[in-house]
View 1 (cartoon, one colour):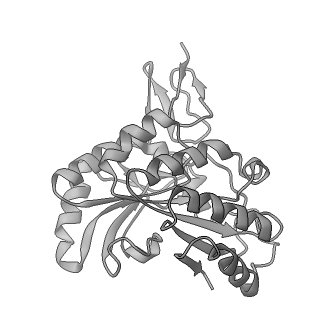
View 2 (tube, helix red, strand yellow):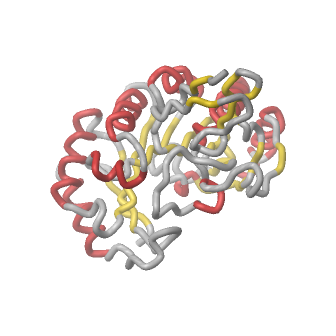
Length: 275
């Protein structure tokens, strides 16, 4: 019997044993769960600024873990080796929530403040993020989510109490941009708005030439973000050829600088990245 996944607006209807669009969530014995539970493909002690988070414990480090899978299909994905992988193609090792939290505590003398769920889309491994973040909070560790924000309201609101900070990708400020990546613009906007009311939120927009480098679009995006919280931080990041956009030229630095100036008309905390 088919079961419907409720994590993201795709609502994949899956037969027993079938895996969803994200390559990670599956119907296992009539229950939808993440097939990538505790399957870690990447683990590193990163500067917090690399998430990027510019105004959340600056100068600190955070233990960053990722798995495989994603519920978008960005042709410019910077981490496509794992986000587009599945259980058969990803190289991973098993790290249970208790082990990851213990490792985070072990790294405290090296400046570690907690755990970040990042690299691929962490929400496709929702249960692992929830369980690990809950344990981390019990140990007084910080929890960070680096996500595309393509999440349904109910699971999103259930997760936010155990998350301290999030960097949410805003792929571009139009439905057309989200059609390019296979996502839903309004869902992401709603996720950003809900998170901004509850936790520390920073936004990243990777500027891809010909997709989302329009000045009026950035002006509209900045005004909308300022309407949520004028102190919200925006990272405007330079694209480099990657994945299915290897023939496209990198974003010009002067374009990034112009978009930063435009965003700063409404937001005081705007940073340029990859320049």
